[in-house]
Length: 458
Figure 1: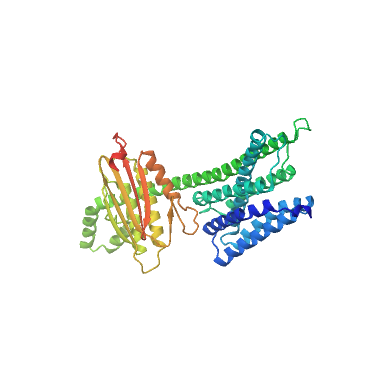
Figure 2 (figure 1 turned 60 degrees about the vertical axis):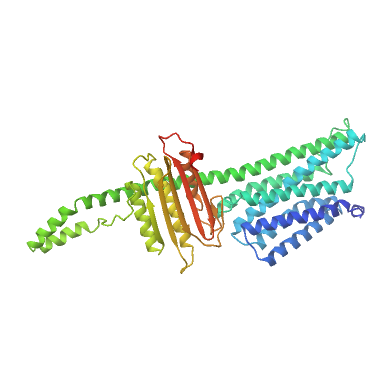
């Protein structure tokens, strides 16, 4: 029981670890959701499990080996069992929180190296050793870095936890678990902090320095691998979704343009149709009138009232206005596209289509009986094209970096990413904000043939 006689390091690091658990709880609550009762159960069970595994691991080397793998599995099991959302998403969140330990060990290895160098160079101790209180303090500072890492992830992982298929979360979690397992095996092989031995020729001091430096590099490479994988996979997914939606819109806009041209031809020939029908009516040729009308019944007569100056945009606005009317959404449109606007017609449709689709989706999530509206404004401002869409939204939703906290969707936020690509392609700017139940998105783009400083317009 000698290993339990001095628990100074253990007592010092305990409050720091409790702070890490608090940050992990907030992370899970944000992306997974849980009741307050389950939050407290997660905190108490995780902390008690950590205490038990640390005390148990100090009894013997065999028990220590077992505890190295027992507690991470216990911690991840608590995340999966006590929080909500899809099981696959819970597994990914647990894997990420387990991987955050790398940040704590990274900081602890670096600080331990600094301490040994200080004791050896400044204090002139030939073979220095870290005292128990110093080990506890260094480990505690390491968990401070872990807390910062969790807080950073909470702000930058919205797109990772939103709108993905379930299997995607599993594919993302498995490599993280492999990295953690390999790291734990290496950590277990360290054996009291010494991984690299010189065979006694260089002394215990250099053995410790090389070992800690080795773990410092291992921690860094493991964190880099985990980070590049998570954000790289998320980037690839978003690019694929953007590309798929972008190309699917091509056929839709071509169809809209064709329908509009068909309607334009019908309007142009309407006078002739009326003359022909009048002649048939005077001659009482009812069967011919019936055949004539049947040929015309599949041709759209209503081309809408949104005359913008661009036929493709007119056709698009007509379709979106019809959908808004069907869903009892108040429609206000004042769009004027000047003849000198040389923005690509398809790019205009990408802007209007995605912005209006998001607006209609937001209005659709509002409870019946509440005010639902969409307001579209577009005009020329100092040789720049200004487009602004305002729409009502559920007041409980929060907007951040192109994504809301709405229910998962396969195209969650992809539309605004496509809008951003078009805007950036014209060296323009985009701004979006939500306040008091109203979402406003505006884009400002200089005309392609005009050399203009966009900042002077803004």
